[in-house]
Image (cartoon, rainbow, N blue to C red; front, side, top):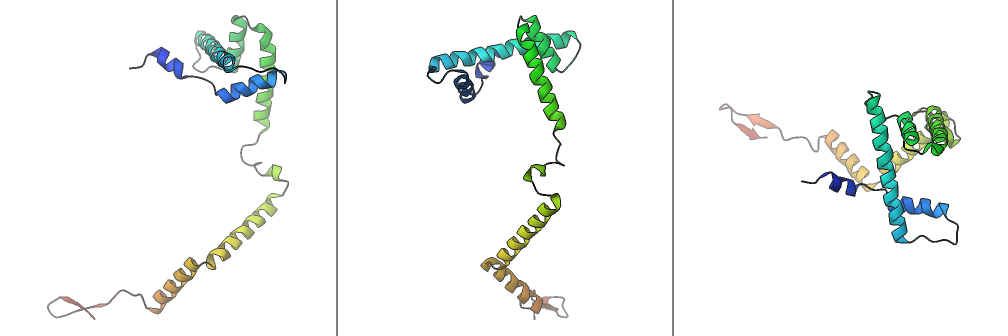
Length: 171
């Protein structure tokens, strides 16, 4: 059975993402070794554990069952990272604004620059083209022939005749 340390060892952040973040922060002429990148990655994971653990404690003290953004901001202050709380609050407010202005699915097609009616007409045309392409295919022609034969009686089930002894024989 794995213990808690085994579980924590498996938790990490994507190396590519961390590498990209590091690269964006460094000047062009500065490189970062793989060992340094791994150390920064471990620091990030540890920082996340520290903040989330403290936020969980704050949440528990407030008799809440879900950690909220306010708990994370309070955890930053209690752990001595109060210099970051304003920036985190600003980012959180921006995130809330973006989420609240996003429409669920009704505005899904607004960014296409076409009215919904035009999109529906285009969709219907695409369906019609697909239908005609299918109807021109050999498979569709075979299916049509089979349906015609069936309608003409060419593929009807064989009929049977019952004799006096109630035995059936094909006609």
